Length: 100
Image (cartoon, rainbow, N blue to C red):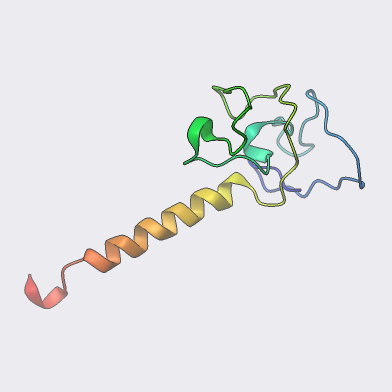
């Protein structure tokens, strides 16, 4: 997995669990947080694809969510995809240079 904040590669052994207090060695951000979870989705209800999960206000803070699963895709990439989609929409509806 990669740290959501700095992108540092975190090597996990098969079946290895992340504990609440585990932090990134590079930036010291919490690893067991919503932004590092496969279920995190900024456009989903509660920003989580698991309907039974408790709402977590600060997605960067460590939590005790029983549904946590380390993600290979970082939240930054999710936001970059959203930014890219927004840019494409802007380009689609942008007025041509000749019409100004």
